[in-house]
Length: 470
Image (cartoon, rainbow, N blue to C red; front, top):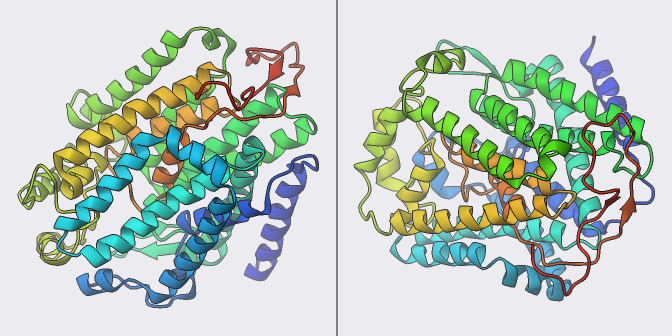
């Protein structure tokens, strides 16, 4: 098929997906387009990379300088986001008060700039990290947060997933890259590498599965069949992209999170919170045992990895020798700059710019103090997502899945507090505590044959503004 015709077909598929998932009764604010644009950039490429303006990062100096084009784009989006938050200051005030641990971690990251070797650059990166939080707050402070979540996922998924397939199959100069090791081809779609393609399939695929389960349970007010068709098409595309991306971390994270998402929707589990604790702990234990304890070397071989996790373990040992302060680290996002970056690149021809472990990355940048704050954030985050699920919030099982992904994905990749990182953005979305607000109630009549029966015959989020914080 000629590329121009394939482009037309792709456009029709995208329009068809939006038509199948239409909901004329949903009312979300126009401000939702801002996080849609921000997160779509995070899940694909920067504006400079799309326009091919100064996108090369072959030198340490380039990482220091950054892209002026992207700087302007991010600054404009952040400025608009701040205006929106100011207009919603009452809701935002309640959100910030309810999320003290998150605010505390961001504050410590800001304080850590005092001992950074590159405070100006680190401050710019801190602003981007705060911008991620701003975008999440815009979504969760929408008058209809449930509808806002659905539309956010739909607007991103229905464009980025089909477009990735189009670029891979018909525009290989944009969707396919070639590695320096023997010129081996790797598929990247709308992103810049195979791991990035894997992570958007992971995050957006889970969103599609969540929507499919909700439609199957009868939680959608209208158009149950057509909504299920749209999500099935997306899941088929996601599985195909997984098959070509060869991103094992994302694939196995998706499989485990899908099991958790399905299990927490099953009526036999809904009344047994202990089962959720046990299932979550068991899957985490399996992942840790296989990856770090050498319990099943055969499992690593099936995943296409070796005992060193593709040289990651060797890298971790060397990086620890470069840490100057184990208590406070090198400062927020400051480790991979200057002499430390140049020395690491002199060790490895593939020029790593992250530790490939989110927990180690936090230690390198923020020291043991940062690790302790991360533990607090994870503990309070789990309490939030579990409370959302136990209180029958419509997004409870999705939040639990995204929380689990954040923990597992960071075993072999670094995503915690990474600016414009999809895994971090969705993890942040999961752990933000939302003060009780008025949500419209939707009556649901689940089909008699539905084994994923909802806990109650009425799907509800929260009752009044004066109820407890979930």
